[in-house]
Image (cartoon, rainbow over all chains, first blue to last red; front, top):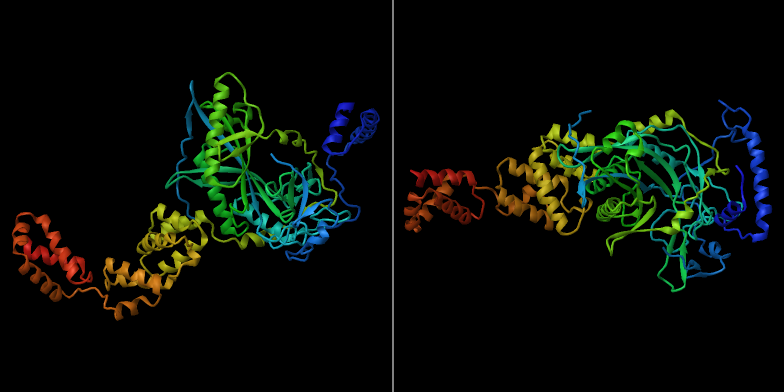
Length: 95
Length: 503
């Protein structure tokens, strides 16, 4: 799979990362290098091998169904560029 | 377990300008898990809190915060799977579904695309006594809900509340086995009923705790059977997905509209575009959500913050052992044990509370009579005041008391209704009320005879007429009932009137 300039632009847009037009070819090239490496990994036969998800054998940590957090509206909103009446205020988005 | 037998309903057929068409419908229902805390944080799930009050730092996607799974939410998903006779996957995993929206601070929803916790199951959708559709469930996965955007508080801004962000949802995905708008509504009704029995989702559609995405396509008669034989979707039409509906009425109207729209396109020689659409109840139409199309590239990948979810068979077995009796079993038992009609049994098992109430009333009493009183008198009266069964001022013991008085012929059916009204509004012990207020049925033929003799003596003209026309005997029965304040045993009165006038 080869990534061209348009695909790179599309990936950037989906991630909401601004990339200048003249930076796109280099970005596409970087993607291709990464994917090339992954294609190389794909050549390894892993038939019947469980994916390793953790270096140490660990069980997914669980929590109990108890309310332990919240009531911190001010802290949650403190980094918001704009907050009004307890809400985050963002540019209008409507279907 | 006793099973009731059923027939499969006929699919809905819509006549187009040129041909007949059938509908094929699959559903994705999002059911909010009943839990205190969110799926991956310790913030509350309570509805109606101050905006952004129920938000933990992980919900707001603050850097460095890690999700920790709420074990009870996992248990609830397993319980739901077991309730739908579904296969439980002892190993499942979480993935990130990436999209950009202001009410999704992480920029991704944690979901289970590749390895859902619950696999294939089924739901029997009741379409009336003796008629039901078996709908296959494809999977159930656990995922996070998004926040809520409010667009009408400011002309230029949208306001975002993250209280719902991260609340646990079960997405319950059906196969395309639903064949009409009514079946779709019945499917949601049945699913909601089962979830409420299980206690895994409160089913409150108004608050958005149960919402449905509906996939609709149309095909010519015969095509669906080919699909069922081969499971090859190419036999079916192109589907559109109508998003996010939280009312049975809207679900039906949206499907009906959408099917007709697709039929018109295909009959005009066009082809349906596979897309996401939104139903507008004000205009009763669906329209394309073009903005969603690009977002459909979700770039799923395994969530690196969460290890696979491994659960133990013994734990699943424990949950299974704790399952309540579910609606289908309960209904079958009511039909078999109490001799109820399937219809009455359906009404009484609509929710677990009604069923428990009925059982308490019917315990050791006449089941059919109990069913009649619970359905006709109690439900009718509760409905008038917009109360549900849990708010009933009449306890099962009180209603049972009334039924005992009827069975013992201590009171007539008519007086029983008056008694019910007294118990409903004033409370009290039915037997005591009957005693104190002299409501006992008069079965003493002497007293009835005296009343009847008086009426006969007072109305000679009527007596003559009744001798010619036996139908007029009813008038005398009515007069005696009136004279005794409704307390006379109607059968005794009838017998006496026949005896005196019938000759």
